[in-house]
Amino acid sequence: MAKILFINPNKWGRGITAIWIPAHAGLLREKGHEVELFDATFYTEWTVDEIGYNTQNGQYKPTDYKSHITYNHGSVVEDLKRKVAEYQPDIIFWSAISSHIHGEGEYVNIQYGYELAELFKDQALLVTAGLQATASPKDVLAGLPGIDILVRGESEKALAEIADAVDAKKNSFQHINGLAINGSEGVKTTPPQPILRDLDELPAYDYSLFEPQTFWRAYNGEVVKAVDYEMSRGCIYACEYCVETVIQSYYGFEKTTRSGAIQRAPEYLRSKSPQRIMEEMTRLHKEHGVTLFRCQDTNFLTITRTTLTELADLMDASDLDIKLYIETRPEGINEKTIDMLKKLKVDGIGMGVELSTQDFREDKLRRFASQDRIIKAFKVLKEAGIKRTSYNIIGLPDADEESIKGTIEFNRLIEPDNVTVAFYSPYQGTAQQKKGNELGYFDEYEFHVDGQLRTMSSDTLVDPDTLCFYKAKFKELVENGMDDLEAMKAEYFREHVAQEAGVGASTPKRVSA
Image (cartoon, rainbow, N blue to C red):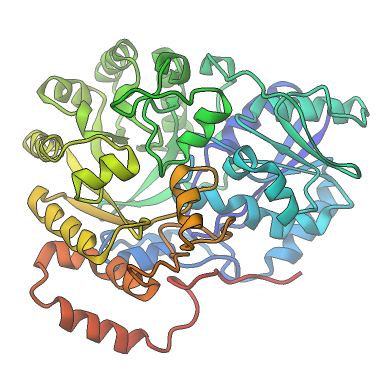
């Protein structure tokens, strides 16, 4: 038996049940290994107040979320030192790919976890995974040199094999596929591991590692028990700014159609069986009181219609008092899918507008979703009584301030129930990241990327301060229009001229060892 300590380096200061944690824990425990979790989420010296920031700018509706949480005002480093001394793990692991992909700050966890894990580089094997590890393992190891092993691609089975090798007292991991091994002779990579074709091969995801308060979540003005959940993995589209393209490339799905979809898509898009999904949801509802399933599937309505229809019938016939929040693209929303969505207990849907200019989306991003389809999707959902959230991006390479204004006007046209706006994030290995680097907007490898909290741009088309203004005022401008735009800008910059740290700054706060 090997002992594995997971670190959740979440800096958002609110509960996130990062999917990689239960997914990896379920398999490791089934194979007889021991797993424990150190969660940094509620340490006040470690986190920023993401929920406060996005409530202030109107992205979230006000709630009493913080009254449900007991924050830790102690030292995250000292508590972690005590945990390691008591538990004496063989392996420390802190980041991985899941359907979360980059949501809720997961993309940056590889370096935030390293800030904590590197303290123990002589006491345990430091292993991590994730999108940067998949895209640029040598760059990651150059910047985070204390890491012993990176897992590229999906990491559940690879981590279990590493744990098996540690348990067997083996000193070599060259026989395990999907690794980048950091040794005295440099970085050695092993061949890619096969993509996980059948998600039912993984044991039930084990959410028991999370402390109870982690399940509380603000949602549409309420505080509910929620989990982040995946029914499927993969997306059939290859938008040039999206980290999904990194995973597609790693597994050999690089050829695309003229409409921006990958070839051989059915081989890449995989899902759990309806029965497995129903069993997991029922258990989470009964054992943890979960009523909201925040489905992190990249494009929910590209799950096979057979799977969704069968699941819809199972859920419709059940007495589970639950609801789903999903993300999908507007192409999948029409009158025919509404009945199925209602049977699936879908309460809210998030869809990417990204930015309003259709030509820009298609020519620059290879995202093919027409204005008319977006407008119709939001209209059909409104008529059906399903809450609609528009996802928007500011700060894309080549996108000027007029594109931001146009996106605000387009949101006024479609009238979403909720509006979110993110700073463009240069995800390592994507076509847009490479372009942004060539144009000088971003460094070749950007640390601290988190689209909800900060911009890393030095773009001359829209300066970072102006981007922060639009992040703070986007929702207000959608609701009230832009007649007072210049006055709002002047007031904002007067108030923030002395601001040098915190949310909106280029780097987050750090803690020292």
